[in-house]
Image (cartoon, rainbow, N blue to C red; front, side, top):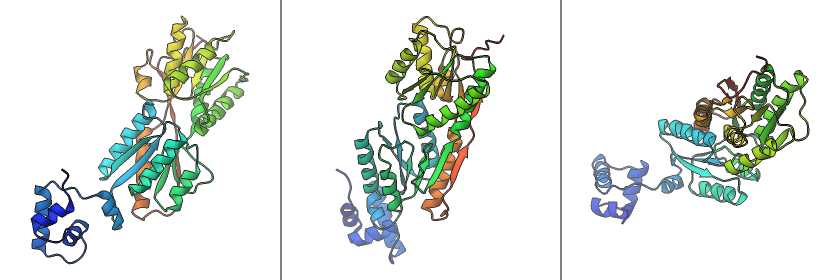
Length: 334
């Protein structure tokens, strides 16, 4: 049976109010009594409730993080980076994977508010962005990670997705590719920004995307495989594909092999994120790297400043992505 504050008070021979004051470091309690209560708490392995602490106005040292899909390698690596940053600051995470479902988004936001977390990181493009305004209206410290929205005044940490898309397009055209396609994430503004940068780089080389060259999907295995089959089933296959996530890129590579195509001999592929998928792919996946660790560190730095009341000016931090060249893109000029 779980030890309660009543058990501590009974064994220490003091009132519940005294135990509460010792836990919350309030009131005038003698040093002898304070040490006795702490000793009993240790003996009984009593863990004070973080919610009870919140009700007294004290920190709970917990932070909520909303991600769309923890099985996506990018968000798995993001979650690990968040955990490392939180741990070093003495905080614990509540990690919530929404699966892009409005019902789960609502449930998780309500849960985090009930848990009295000290702050929230939103790393997913919510179906109902009014939930973010709900968090803001509670004056709860908030940082948007890899997402942004003009209706919300809060801290934002993102990657320059337009620049990332441009790097991908410039790399493919510099290798001589002219029959190029893109598979982008459905309904994500970051993916649309990558498309904009990609298109700009192609247009500078007089390469123009046609109908059928742009395919949308969700960044999950089955839908990525479906998009890859759709792209490769056309009468004229592209020589190169830009996939807006590494997960989609690896799905394209696998589906291409099933059709007897060699990577990069018959089809070049470039991804985005530089996750472990990119390193494990065969051949290694050329990709656009998001600086995940630095983004997580900036995110928690901003969040902690707000929690501690030392940051009132809302900041938007945009980090620059970089091209990581491996073996999945062929130079057809050679």
